[in-house]
Image (tube, rainbow, N blue to C red; front, side, top):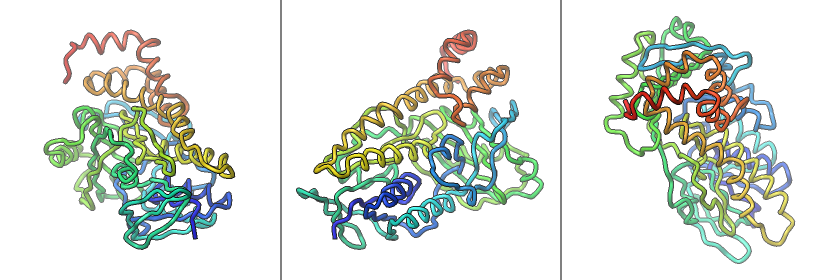
Length: 387
């Protein structure tokens, strides 16, 4: 049997794309290298704009909505802001991904776990895919297998893959500490050079991490995270539950995301932003774009996957490019930028509006450089020297 689509990776992008294609009547096979539910190193903050990309209710796996944010510098809270509508929802990624996968299966997709792709061969009318479990023939191969995508390597795509790095700990804290944090997500823009730290609360623990943009390695990154934790006495006597590092794909550079029979979505397509490292929103968005292009052309003799790359470049890449410009402007001056954010209610609204989807990175850039010229002048006057 020749499959219609073989999707490698059961994360948000792969699962949502499998859902759409299976719901449309295609024969869809999901291959996941681990057994679901599986741990995924991720803060678990799913922005409101990301949830709007999902065509079904995911409330059963939402820990609770983030009703406000705390902005800190080197562990010291600088401001606390409330949002009228939650700007994000906090989830555990193992449960979130598994829930999306179950939706894809309910729509008609099949799942094969403990399945790793080892290579593929293009045939005139299909693709033969080799995996550790068995071989498949499929009309379309889709890489949704993350920043280290084996599909991308096998297809000779994404040869130039800029990335950052994150290190995340899951920590057990007391009920008192959980109550004090409440439904607030903490962003610390002095936790690490050219990046930020975070504290995302869950029902019974915290996800705490650091993200460094524009660098694949950070010397002594574990020590930096431990020092960041030590700088926050409000955490009390916490217990480390897990500690994982992972690369963050940094998008914004136009590259082919397809060849004749293969396309990439989500992290495999390097679709995460360089300011906050958010990837789930763009993963879901790319899955929706891919589904639209595939289904629109399905009855044609040959799919023109170039249209998918063009759609991503036209719609998603501009957001990632502005995110990179903002990261390059803000992160070298994290201390001053945090103080300026504290003083500007307008900028606070814009920053959290970007996360929720009420505003865009382009609008935030314009607010900094055009509508708030004094803020830009203060940053530049700070010395032309980084911290």
